[in-house]
Image 1 (cartoon, one colour):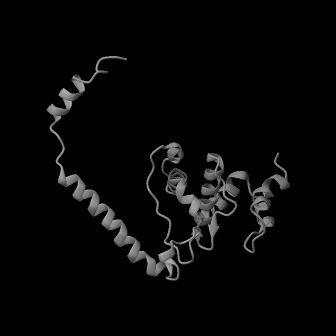
Image 2: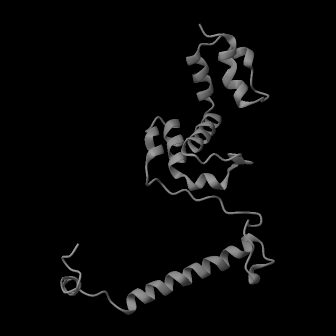
Image 3: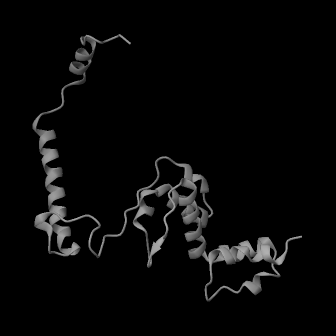
Length: 171
């Protein structure tokens, strides 16, 4: 038989909140307590994401900063995808996918953690975004121009070069 302390343990671990009524959980079975916690999808999803990060070995001290997730969470898309799948009744084992979806962190409103470049001192992050996007677009334009300037050799030429190389056929 499960005693009262075991039934109230999940609420105690989660910490005090104004909407926690531990006394209401005492007469419930374990399954009913679990269903009650799972009914609050926001908190349950956050708890699962927190567990996933812990399980993967990358537990952050704070899962959220205000209403946004900590930036480190976005480095582990499989943890996010598994928590989302669990909430939707999907495949929780997405936690072990090596190639998961890409999640982009929200753009910063405040100062960056890294020191700015000398010519970027002063403007706000919102003012720097257009400049940064122009720089990125210029890099891509240069890469496309480079690729178009010299067409790739035909596959037959590459094959003959491989066959005539001094290390061809040797292991």
